[in-house]
Amino acid sequence: MTVSSAPGKLYLFGEHAVVYGEPAVGCAIDRRARVTVERRDDDRLQVEARDLTLDGFTVEYSGGANDQLDVNVPTPLVEAAMGYVDGAVEQAREAAGAPDAGLDLIVESEIPLGAGLSSSAAVIVATIDAAARELGVDLPAEEIADRAYRVEHGVQDGQASRTDTFCSTVGGAVRVEGDDCERIDDIPDLPLVVGYDGGAGDTGELVAGVRALREEYDFAADTVGAIGDVVRRGERALAEDDVEEIGRLMDFNHGLLSAIGVSSRSLDAMVWAAREADALGAKLTGAGGGGCIVALDETPGAQTALRYTPGCEDAFRAGLDRDGVRAEG
Image (cartoon, rainbow, N blue to C red; front, top):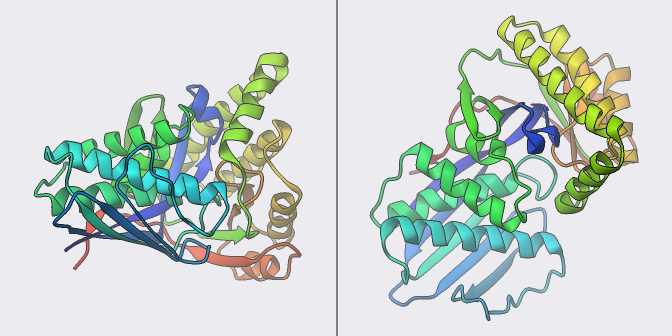
């Protein structure tokens, strides 16, 4: 039996624009997905998923294209989640040269599903690492990140960036621009507060909506470019440990994301609640449409305000997780 875990992630700056070659900065947070893998004597794959902000479910299938998932949870999120797990297992089997290896998996996660905190990336990365090690192969971080990206890219119909899977693999803070990924080593310990509305946006639909706006309106394309400009200013602020400037730029980033149609009433309400409680800045994180916001606040003010905000189901402080994927005891 082999166990691995990987962290979730939030965007400080750059979601959506990163799909069009602009830079983005993400931070791994101290909420993790944990995957336990044990080899079977046959060629079947059994997956038990827990704590994915849905009722627990178990599914047994062989990974074939004709298999139907007998799951009593009718949601596209579950179908996507199983696609991520299936793809991750196939990557591990390929890396180990064991295409017919049967495996039992238990997937547990502290990260809300589909909420903009990269639950899928954490599950993919942890699954690849644990399954490969169970099959006798220790993969380097670069290969895990690349294989994990291939899985997300496939499930998300080519609309994924490398940010999520790279950040979950290496931990800490990362900068991604196109295929260039690097870890930011000197990031300060930012006072991150997350608000969660209990929902989830449809990533594919939101990305397609931004694409349609860019194609129809020049100023929408300019808005996406402006998000890239905010990211570059944000990188300088991070290098200078200028937390107040980071907060101001987060506010700008949220406004630009709202302009291209990826915010929502609940996300805006949480952003404004945090700002009115004197947070240094606040923005949505991830695809948008619902899910999470992130605020900068050293005081209890933003977290308290979020807890009393209609539509906010949870508010918590998130620490920077400087560890990426790791073996668990």
